[in-house]
Picture (cartoon, rainbow over the protein chains, first blue to last red):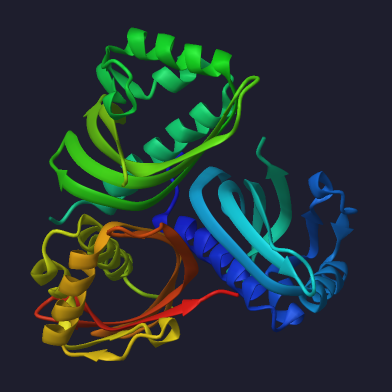
Length: 134
Length: 134
Length: 134
């Protein structure tokens, strides 16, 4: 698969910026803007329901911001798996740390499977699935 | 050192894909295919013998797949150290986690020194050496 | 922000090489050479005084090398935030581990804010600020 390096970096940067918006815990609207209008957040491996559509994603992220005192997502091992002009599939590993307000810190490690789609020149998350290791 | 960005990314991607094949623990043949025919796996710092040749590497990886219930290799700090048309040296940091079948989870951190060689347009591992920190 | 990929990679590589020089703990002069003449190291979030100028940075790094038995800086989530011809701002996440000589190992996680400047074709650290998570 020979892809323009600009596109590859644009997808990786988009996902890094999304995780930065999550870890800043300041603006759920900004964080949700990284999703397509029909974007899907799939944390079912963590026992969460499937979240469908940018509005529902924003609500979920807002709830997380309200409940968490700290969030950290360390990304690595970015791998582009398929790509055409306006759609791509990639994965990254993640080491994540969280501290709920009034709760104990926890850690998680796993793989994010990312389906990205480009519209109006901007890559966005069409579907994000977390698959824990172990 | 001014190197084509395509080559640099090809080497980093190759090594990331190799680690994904290791962490999937499903096909030692695929994992070993990332080595050159005369590729060397040097985990002597962990007390392992030097493994020489793709066939021996495949056998070693197969043994590891049979014995491990979980493997995770988080790569970072990729640094290309030298490169000419068909050979390159690089290093990456790694945070590794493993769980033997019926055993206790362990963690390791260190540096992978990678010698890569290109044949028929494909970059492969000519020698991989793990050097633990500390 | 559309930036030449060569510059982006040059900045990321420079910072990765700087962290490798720190983790090698062998030559404070080499490590300090990644800073501009007026470079600033801001670890005030860790209780350290602000270090101003390459000479003072080198002295600080030399003192750290003398006192530490192990250092590891795992970088991830590189994000270029602004860039013009000869100045750039970026951030990376870091998971750091250290062991003082005769002391206990510790871990830190946070964000490095990097201001980089280019002179004579070489990108250097103009200011480096560590901001711990949590």
